[in-house]
Image (cartoon, rainbow, N blue to C red; front, side):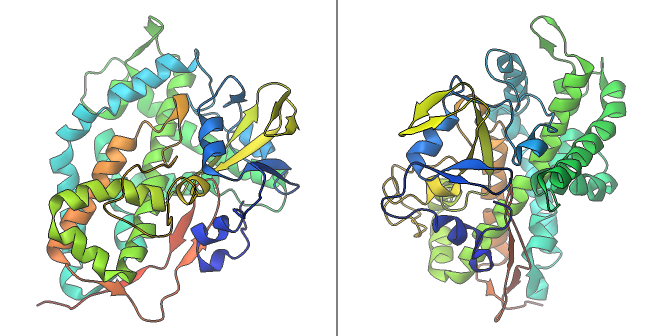
Length: 389
């Protein structure tokens, strides 16, 4: 999962090779510590939505590394998970997100204005790697100069490096500890505060009628930072590469604000970036396979969005598609709490970009670099457009 065959042609293209006619619902790989892989959309969806059989006790692979992952409440199952999830939902609900839209728009506009007249940028480095991070740091009231440090921790957790499960576990643990150490003094400073920022809101919440435990607060705030610093960052670059290659889609997006707003869901379907896992909660039979408690199952969300039995012509980005089926935000009790913010960030990016840069393409000869992991990444996304003076 960290070194997909054929990834130089694209992350989604590499995963899609797993999906062949007659492929069983689950296949075994001896790599990355040994684990099962869900190969189609129905299986991915079902395993995500059933915590009684498929636990979140360990969600990252290899399992040795996943055991070092401490964030809250992603490693919990209901009912323990529920009050923490309610806290996250309160902080990231649609009403709260709408209140910050003007700020989000301002961040996007400022970034695009800085290069719009130049006729070129590296989208991954000059926009995608900055915009969601600036938005998140503003929501959390954290200083921008901390971003390089936090980005290292995020990479260690979502694309841990090493040649063995043990080495990868050490890298992931270093990232997790880095986040915990970073948020520790911030949580202590904001406990009992009445600020409007996301962290103050979260750490002054009650869990089952009592103030949140300090270590659990560290896990909760670390999770927020990880989500804000890695997933949307990479998703933005994937769909912009596609739009740069398909000027007819860009024209469609420009033609009607409603097409743009509705089309965003189709982009989430077409370009999922997350591959989490679930742990088998007890010995059971599934899809004709005997699974043992503790077995790991990888859920590549790409194999749901690109499953032609659920989404006809899955490679086609169809902005008018109805009945879209995907697991891009996960599913079940752990469905991504940040999805409203992610949607808004994508809509705002497209609106502000197309106002300033109505036509653009990939620089001739450009070869984006793709990376797979728990969150996929892409670098080297040079875009060009007619420069204005």
